[in-house]
Length: 99
Image (cartoon, rainbow, N blue to C red):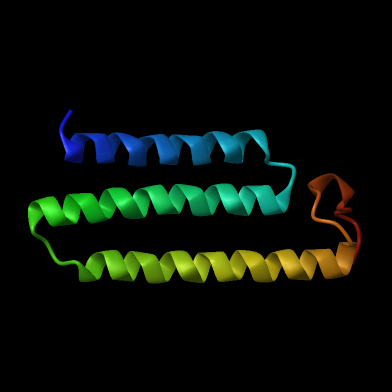
């Protein structure tokens, strides 16, 4: 196989592994965030490969990376807020009626 085809397949496997981890561990917030970040890493790798093949602007991939970092920091701040208020990051311990 060609190196670029192999790289595309590896990035697609990363995306689908992250998606399967997100679906199977949806009750635990930290595992969900890690699965989302793994998916974003695979998408970033695929985007970088495609932009270098096309010869497009590499600044778009940097913009995507900035958005991924902002999403990760927002997720971690929500995780800290939930752990401080509820004591755990399991979704089954949350009560909707609590203030």
